[in-house]
Length: 293
Image (cartoon, rainbow, N blue to C red):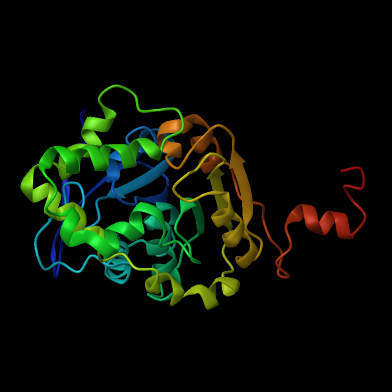
């Protein structure tokens, strides 16, 4: 399945591949693990009808460089994302982040000092106790899992990916997601990146979530089994004025399970806020408007 990233950006630890399409106000799409920017193959063109859309592969993923010794922790991904924003000369883009991309986007906002116009987090790592399930097993047993026979490794990765979708993959999609992790080099790369992703890197900014002043939208699949709905509620409770939207009959991969509904949320405007942080609707209610709602 065709998906290309034509541009390169040099970092201290390797080349990151990226691409851009469309025209209009900029929006940046940030993927998570164990996926790549291929996740945005339907979403990016839809947004590009009215926006300039930037996509990229994190180091260690997709078409970006993968090699031994790379720092692939969330802090490093955050620094690289900040460098990319500077390279693109984007001072206040909209940012859309999924899975560990949420933690990367939050670190870049809160700890790397970059600013966004607005932020959408969906089925995203944000904070709390998210080292769980298969993720924890990989952290604790990466050396053992790295020695699995190739067929057993591929079966493990494929079952993990299937667990992330509620409705199943379309023909050919699972193979495209599996391709970077196949073979001896792919297997090593898979466990290399997982073993470096740590909850400690989200704990560093949790106390700053309450100070976020930009508009934030949280969108979540009701059937997410990777990051169940309580993780959405955890974020919603800690980020002031954040919107929370549920998508029914969808799992962790909204890009696969409900791309149309996801695009609908991503193209909806955010409510305007006054100097006191109230939305237009909240202000009307306080002054006596919208009494029947």
